[in-house]
Length: 379
Length: 135
Image (tube, rainbow over all chains, first blue to last red):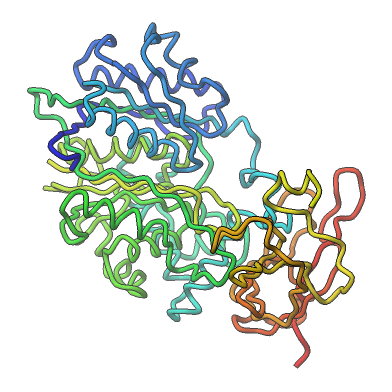
């Protein structure tokens, strides 16, 4: 907790995630902002500051969204932290509310990727590994191979992540891919970076999400408390690194649990950064839902499916929702708000009291990931 | 040190005199080795205490991927892998001759140099590469 302060998420909304080339990022974000305000039952003048996460939307993305809603004049903070941009925006908004700088803040995550062409997103230039021909799917392929080498698992076992998340996404109207699929279909899909196939990677997407964060809970009871909120950056190392041990996620989760006074055993559901199928397995272990090397067994037992001990990505995760970079972290928190207030239509985890949202990403040489955010929320 | 070099954390890799080694550096304070070269030691924080050193193979393959979709300058399919070189220096590079034998974790890899990409102006990007060592 933030000392004696309380931070509540009192409203949230997201656009459907998918390919919306006829839209702009600003229009998507404006829809999410208006819907989030309506969800919170607030007028636009209740917003005292705005925190806007995006990666490729350029300078002053937040101002471009809010000026057309007549919501400028307040401090607007534009935040870029790769895949964790939205999570970083949420963390900064929570801090401002906890510190008493503002009573009520707006968080926006937005991204338009379909207009950037197809294929894997171009990574930053000038990075020594990118110059050698590393791609994000290749990095996840190496993670997959390292995991299977270390624990003697099978690629069929890893593909089950996609199968489970597709099953979850069938009930999520905001997800891009909602058709069920089989392990065979996952492995027969287009090769991207052996052993990674297309259906083991999250699709690019367009989308936006918005949240209202406040020190004042509404009378309606349709709100959740932020129990832990952490941003971490990856530590540089030139030497050996175990690709199955994501130190940045482990560190962020440990700090978030400490802040909340909770442990992984207290978590009822999680939205985690399954940018690739293997990533979800590795994060089960990093977030403490099982021991090292037990991720595939946890998945195979059905423990991470809706109805299991610790449902992970009941929304379908990045693999099915798609990953509009800056929007993802905010959308995960909107999912938490809906799940913990019993409003996750079609993919509800019954009786959930505590949820965890985890974003991590940004491939740069020498660190596990550029940035990671973990948020714990509860009712 | 040139003014330009002092402004940048990562120096460009020098032309290597030897095709079977990498032009790296070693911290004069703590002994940490790096590739590519840099001026600030991330371990002990020394600034400007680096000395040039040849980082030699063979190293051990940690993990690899066969890349089938890549930016246009690279010709698919190709292999990339993390190789742990002596002195705890991990380097990502392309692996040549990857299709002649199955690549396995722990496999010994030699350092070599070869073209790895075609630049937009048509010139070849020559780089260090790894090659499975003969038994």
